Length: 372
Image 1 (cartoon, rainbow, N blue to C red):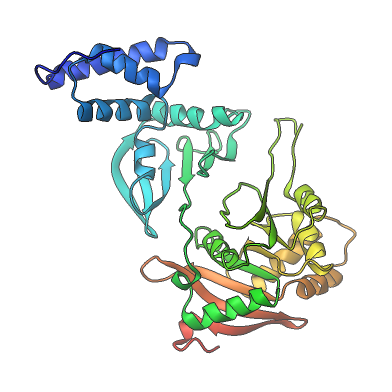
Image 2 (spheres, rainbow, N blue to C red):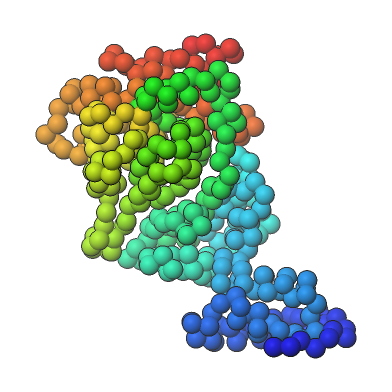
């Protein structure tokens, strides 16, 4: 469609009225026409005198509102933002460079529900009273977590987490001496478990560690929601599948661990162990698949080992706790603790060797020179 030459700049009131008409026409269009290119055509029809820069601004804003997540998408794209958090109707929070801060963006219940629908529907999932908890990944890698009422008492909850597409170097997370020790553990194909609380940088460190591997190594990654972004010629990514409401089609992490053993891995990486899959992972690491890595939620090294033992025991009630504890300690060679520093920066805080009698501290950031 040819645009007439701009003779004057449309007034703000005219632009607002025209964009309102575009919204109505776009929402009334068949779903097959609901695209950004169609949106641009409608804006051109309603505002043929709009300048190129202003045109793109209007189209971008409408596309974000009508086909994306509106202001939530814009917040997620801000420099340094990794998380956008909606705690029900009210102010939206973000995490930027390791610190939580409230924004001047406010959302009501209908906006939250609309954003959740746009997030989960393209992924073939449902978020409703029958499915009040949804955990998924968008095609761009953004992790989506949803909890709906009545489980969420104060209104629908939405958390978006976007990991940087640029890998963080190991030197940015750990001091030089620890970097060398971690590289040595990788070179000697020691099995590592990274532990720490939620949001402490476990996945970030795992990405940095695995970025140190030789490109030719065949690495199989297994995750509940795929977040690891590894370089290499032989990186195989596996992701669990939630299945339908009655469990049809569900593929759990422990199923993928077993499948990974048949894929000729040089290293197996389980993004995070949360349950019975810990037994399959420990078994794999104990039977010749050295150099593996995983993460778990824990506040300290001994708690990390105890959690692994507990998760293994949850897989089979016939297992003996002492035998499982020995196998876990045989399988795991080192524990790396991560957390946030005073400025909110994620960093390696402790390093421990694992032996038959428990854990031995190698390095601790809180001890001045790092000596344990």
